[in-house]
Length: 117
Image (cartoon, rainbow, N blue to C red; front, side):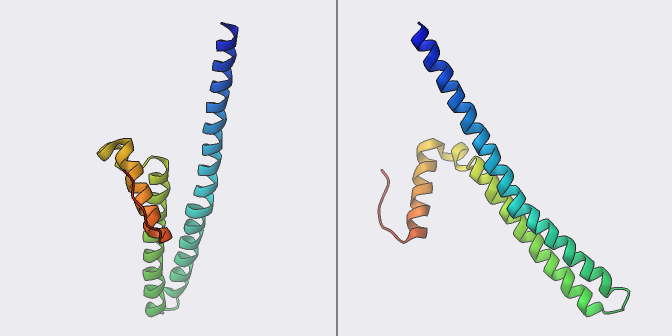
């Protein structure tokens, strides 16, 4: 009985440590990816604001277009981070289908052949 309690406590600690590590990685990724994009968006908006008082419509419009592209990139990055936390395929095709999709995508990106059964 004591041995099984010890194993259960050890298992619980392992799960908690894994969760904390995932939280740490998520916080770092959000900071690095999304945080950097938000700073860049703010800088682009400052450039646009500076162009408006100088009546430099062309510079202001270019800055706004650049900001729009950065915002799209930030949305893609955020979507990628969220998908990394819990791939949407889990709901659609279950764990086996999601794993097959993941490994197939990895093989394509790595340029290696192979299949998942």
